[in-house]
Image (cartoon, rainbow, N blue to C red):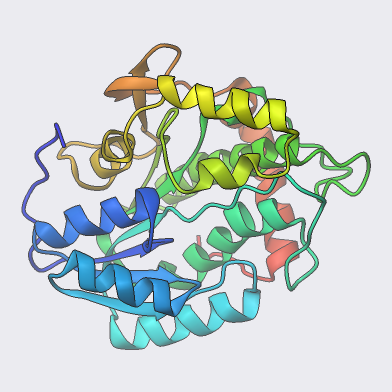
Length: 296
């Protein structure tokens, strides 16, 4: 890591999708600097293996973001055992480039997991967040070319998996920005911050290509030559989570080669992601879909 993380002793951090990739590196670094880290994972066996490798003060809890019941149960139990949470890293992400699939609640799988699950989780944990807590939402450069179609938010017409992924990341980005607006309006000192990893080699990369034809898979594997390591890709979210002086609504990402790799700095939001009208509309839709309403 090129970024020196401040001491985290006495802090409770929750990292979703912490058993692999960006989440695992994030959890490792937070634990290494003294935080008590909750590994929120769908696969408990994989979480246990990650916990053994990470060491330090960590615990594993089951969380399936594709199930609102699982989100509710996780948040309820966590808030009892940890009434004060200092950091929530909404890291978990799903990439599916096969046929359209849905969550347990009937949502398009990528939107339901990547955004709606985290929206419900954050809302249910809001009362447990410390006065100076941070919520980090993991965006993607794919959000810049995506568009939210509120007439077909679940992509039931003319489904394209790659476009659905970009839409889920745009929705995640809009959520992080709108959460910041609402926290500021409520006079809260809790920070909503965003980050994206650029083009990073994670376990999601080969999964994203498994349904492509052979020539597509070969081209995608060749693209690994221009990606950066998962350790470098994790730096933006670690800075968002721990750097002194961070402001609500800041967006961190790589600054080289079209924000695909390199030194961490301020990333750029797409016009749609920054639009307050889009933020209000998505927020209302997310509340209706999840049944979770924020006390803001």
